[in-house]
Length: 266
Image (cartoon, one colour):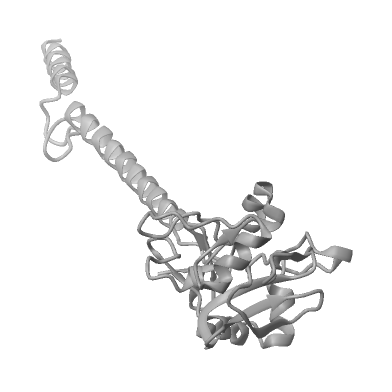
């Protein structure tokens, strides 16, 4: 009977010790108890989450880098500051429409035939609108005699230069020669009988006509003609013109004639 009581007491004590966790071999993790390990596991998960975010941010950075890649502009057609690039040159997008020289002095306007003839015969600068109609200015620019180009006060505005015969030759060469250059330079609209161009190079040459030595106006809608700054002889200078055909031609005209002017960006 006494032996049975001892066995019961020993068994109860053993169960008490087991439940309190004081026996070697209980479930403990290195560095702490089970309750200490749980936060460590949570931190590891958080670290992985942050790592995932970092990868996401890296992906976004790569995406932004792709978006900033430069766009290549078509050769010969890039435009900025009122110019069009043809080959290595930057031409103005429109004909000159200035009423003053670079230094601010006014260029004399010659409206009547008598005024136009007098300016040409005396070798003095003059300008006019086609048919003396100011509404033609915004579209075609002004017509100048060659003496306005040669005036030491400077016809081209600041930052611009008058186009020389050499400059026009460069355009012809770049566009494949005289026979093909004209169509590539002519505007898409404005030419009589639908003889418009492709304006492939962006020059947008319009048929602004001209004024001859006696003061008469001719060929609006049929011919666009531009002075060069290059003298050919004492009383003539080189010019370049577009007609109903597809060529860009050159001639030597009297300096008294009124023609368009197209400048180059310096």
